[in-house]
Image (cartoon, rainbow, N blue to C red):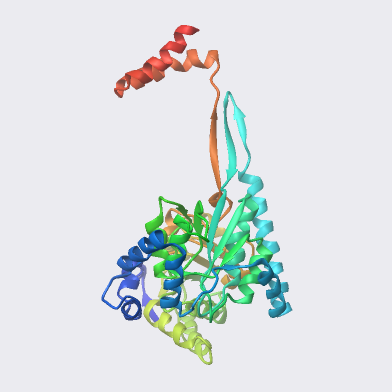
Length: 440
């Protein structure tokens, strides 16, 4: 990891690269596209083609792309309820218990949030209704690995919000959906599961096919093709956001534990070669100790190559003069995960404007947030924490305004409405109000 000195240099280095550019330049992505499409094509062109094909051919296109991309010849798209139930026998019971504990925590957190925001009100003829979305699609990454935690973190908030039907899509791995994913789907109360992934699954959720129903909103992270597909179908359906590579920014002072810092940086780096692991500290000594400890923690790691590439290309340690300077960098960078490993960490919370989730104190490792703390781990990345929020109850509800105008309100408001309408050139609008005023 590189170590840089000073606030201004750190500010210039902590820049954001657009998500499409980040992946379009990847040799691996270019090679994969050539293998699938037989020609040079950029990711967005490829995704547009997939979406168009799914709209036209439905299930047949899903089967074709799953064979071409995942190497799996599907005989059935949907995973039946009996297969979900039988998955419990294939999963270590310790993992089942851990998933149930995580589910309880996620459910409890979002239930408390629902109690706070999902209330209707009525005042002077005006009010608000709260309605859950009818059907939501949850995308869970897969293929080379399984992510049961993502099932819990996306489906449970939707369930708590009252969504009537939750549809899960995930790529098949070696011909089937991993049992741990199915167990998590059962625990989370998912209604239907389909073993299909990629841009084609997003297109199916957006437009519907013979087997997969059209949804109102698509949630969940994925690779560049999934992310671009969500971007392109937005407007036909709602989306939760455009998630990019995972990232952590640790703010630490001389009181921080160097090993804890290093472990959290390496943990973040093992997600993806494009993940970002950043330490901003006020201590030169800590910076040096963390850099050495990172090298130690990489040794023997199963995903050592991935973590090492991430740390080499997107890892950084910056030394600044004060914690306040560090927090200024935080607000400029708007990290997905922010870890505060400083003395009196709570005192700095109010100074943080832009972050997906704040982890306060050295015991609060980001890993606990990934799996069991309670808030959804589906967080804004790529600097979008400047204007967006973690996945939460509000993603799965909508508000309907209520307006009741009585005689007194009509007299109070009517002429003003007519005046504004005429100023905007809408004579019929003005007359609609004035006729009611005459009647009174």
